[in-house]
Length: 125
Image (cartoon, rainbow, N blue to C red):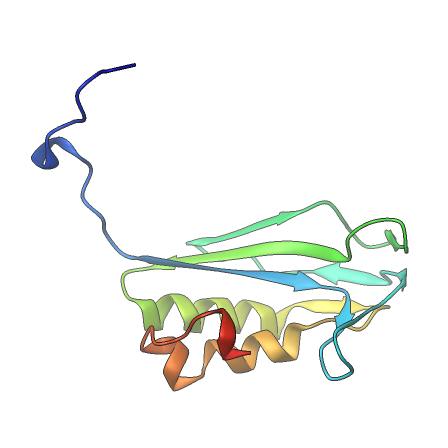
């Protein structure tokens, strides 16, 4: 619309770090094959600085007609390492039964030195 951009000093200051993972009903060890079934249990612990966006719950059916994403889980903390540790802890303590997920892969990635150092891109996997 031709308006001027705000001055740099008027912009909000970045503080802390956030990391998001996508929890999928898939078998990461077998070419990421989508998994189907009924979620016998679906519980992700809640912590300060943790956000869980999901459309499933215990009893939900993961079928073949939709994307097998179960949740987006986002952690915020004052440092990248703290955010990754918080996110890994929440995933490890999650109770997900009924379908295979990529949870173990995500936990492993969240502890990998290259990811923690911010030296990864989409080719990392």
